[in-house]
Length: 174
View (tube, helix red, strand yellow):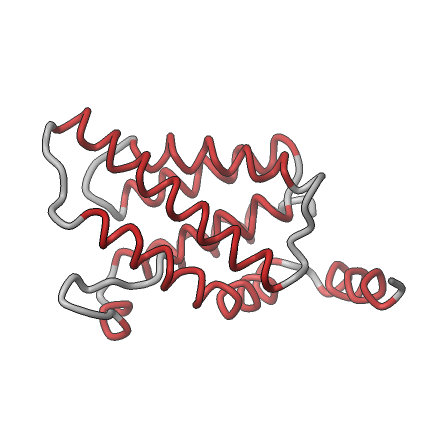
């Protein structure tokens, strides 16, 4: 997929506002208020669909948006940029068309980026969040379960009609 930057940036702005706002609090779970990370799902979606420089640029932009909607600048941009770049290279080996692959990718990326982000926050600020292991694991599980629904919505918002029809034709010819 070649990224259409105007559409991507509008969707990214919308997802960042949703992620930072209180709308997702209505679907949060538990005393830690665990909710799905929409930016993380968008990261996996974009890295699995885009190629090369587009995927890397999009990953860093999504990380920057996560930092803006978060507590500190830098950790998400580094973690999302690194693992988004890695995931875009991995798409040559693993296809993200199967639901189980999407769920597994979201879960693994959520765990790895969550740990790296917490480590970078600790290095930067010297303090760590209480119950960060439960938060990371809970966010990874919730995001991976909500991922396929969000993936479908992102597909509808970001892919043009021609790309969706071409994708359907390719999958119908298997």
